[in-house]
Picture (cartoon, rainbow, N blue to C red):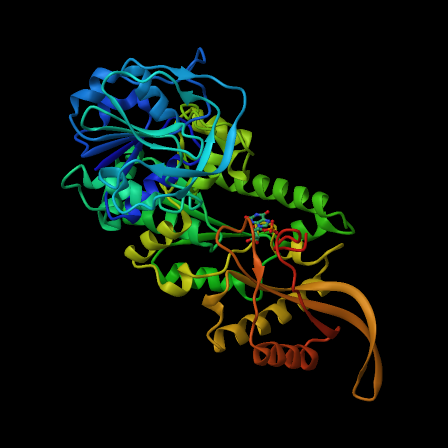
Length: 502
Ligand code: XMP
């Protein structure tokens, strides 16, 4: 396999992902665990936020690294570290070079075989290599003639830019060229990965009881099925806060039944609705729901021996809560609240999906036999329909949203558009306007339809749905749903709009 040593860059896991996309097995390690990486076929040292001149700059056991006798690629910080290890030096700078730069390879061989004469790459660094050791050759420079790629001896390579981000246009090819210098590498199969995960879970859990929260969403579903597959003594808890879509509770229960996983439902819609009563401020609504959810879940958990979470890699890297991790804290996610961090410290939190990205989780889910319709469900926000009901939330409004949403989604499914969009839903616009229904004047609310495509929910674009779908949806809503006399379609991109309305 390819061992990726993590010096704390925000992009480290992307390197792992790219290597897997190229078809090779890859695993992430902390540099101090270098003795545990087994028999790698190639090693990649990631970038990182520190400067090699910092007092607490992460280091590497260079003798051990050399002893593997396999190709090594240092990226950014990794390259600077290698240059120092070989006897060169690094120039510190306070100015960060961030963004696109031009890569000019000296030759079209080895790392740069088939790479354009001038290729856009992505930089994110402040230090640069300074003096080069005797065994170093410069493989490429940037537009100013500064060396941005080195080779030391026969098997050590360094690159200043980040080949793993898509803004480095030929980054994948460069990574691939590096891996080709390694000879035969173990292929990546999600099946192998699954086997390793299951073995790891068994070892960590033993006969302890594990509690996991399920929502019907992809991550928690894959997690629960994985735990079942590992034969873990598990309690799967589903909190129904009453802010779910039409018949969603039943749907989630029947889906888990289909997969042979028993779940416990905690029905507490009354509690949530009464706590939300009269509250119109979006942030206050979110806080009420978030806190109540944790309280209810925690009460159900009791004194469980372990807690499993469907945390994915992006959550981990953004929270940087793993104390060994060298990444900077960007923001703290909901599954990183203090109570969970305390449990984590005691070794009681299990996060088997934490090395994966969403699409890899879907692939894992498929290999676990989870039906496609479950894996392809659209994302749904934790606070549920409350964020699709601007202002105060009550039963009447929720009923209207549920009916309209159900009609819209059924139209998308019937026309084969559900799987083509990232997320689609109906939300209430609680503004009354005048209309005519039958021969009577109507004075009712509007409903808004939203359908977006996105890669990671950070940015999104509205979808040019066929008029036929909009027409059928609108027609049915206006005829079937009491309280609505107007249907709108949201044509806002994110940014500046968000996907949800609150
Ligand atoms: P926004 O509205 O921020 O949404 O553009 C981006 C994506 O995140 C979902 N979302 C949430 N998911 N808890 C969640 O688990 C939340 O509080 C939450 N708020 C928004 C939203 O549905 C979209 O997919």
